[in-house]
Image 1 (spheres, rainbow, N blue to C red):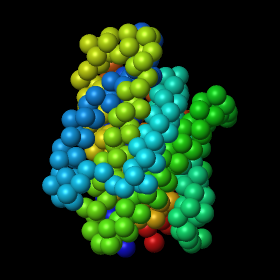
Image 2: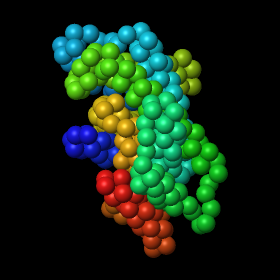
Image 3: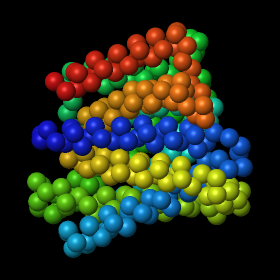
Length: 310
């Protein structure tokens, strides 16, 4: 496996962490301008800025925009899975520290493990399995508050994680089929139609909630009050998502997902720094006990990351 794939796979968690921090600011405030469905739709507008150039590049490079119908429709409909997962995440971070909510995303590799094992014929070694377990343990450690886990948030984030894993599985499965059908297994450009179809589905289902009157009203208000924040968040996330799609197609699914487990580390660093030095950022818990708990959780994740790289 080419080393540059791991470099590509490390870019998404950093970009996702930045977008998570912006997300926390976006959903902080009154319900009138932070409706989760409306915020997803608002973000989808900015995705168009990147999807169009990706489509043009796809057409110029491969001579087509879309994969075969057998691959296009699953990838396109996969956008509904992604949108629901995003809504659950937004709901969670409205009431929970973003560093804790994102930590629960470390269950994604567990779901990805079973999907990859039975759907993609992938084989994981014991060191890699141990790495995934340690990464998830670190994530759970970071999610505990006063010895307890918020059950409502936990259920929402677990379901969100499962849906994200399904989304990843669909991209990996049909993206690989597109590459195999092209006959050029060594070329990453053959995956572009699959990536474009995936992004197109996310855009469509991201805008679909605007059929609701409440969502449209919140969307209009949010467009006035949170335009710049959402632009920065959406562009950051879409760039990370595109690079993550490439890594998912070219590398074993569970491995790519596990490497993304470093995301809470970047979220924690950013959230702590912003809490201490930025008055406008929603405050995170930065007491001594909380920081020690987070250090322990991060240590588990670092050990898992080392095992993963062996």
